[in-house]
Image (cartoon, rainbow, N blue to C red; front, side, top):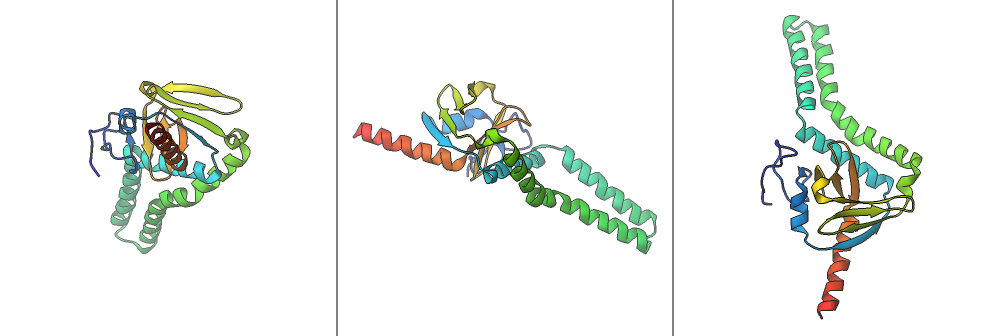
Length: 199
């Protein structure tokens, strides 16, 4: 899996193939798939959970703040143990706090985010609408029964992807979702159409 150039959007991470869960420049995905395609999909609660988990992984990898916060808390716990002379009560409390700090991201990732995704998906009716999306040289277009719009590639902050979801990042916190299954189906359909025309 070849590493490309460092990403300006996330200088801590290299830009990689779309199957890696990192943010990369939009020029990479545009140049990797130089085809026009149209896809139809509906975001499920699991799709939304996949998007939130991918965004969380991206945040933890690319942002210094959560790492710094956890490091400070762990150092405070160690300092409390040392300064107490390894007093049993303080030591037990500090060790418990360190375990809690280490488990908090896992609890959020595997429990809180899926629950939040299901609740939001249930409450936000617009997530239930079928989406018609188009991908071309100029940008990415998406429309539902209520809204439609096109955003040029140059206006995106970047993108992030894994084997289940592609996120088009309009800012570090705002994104559009494209399930990987819909993207793959669009590519296959487009290639079959091109093959028939070529044949």
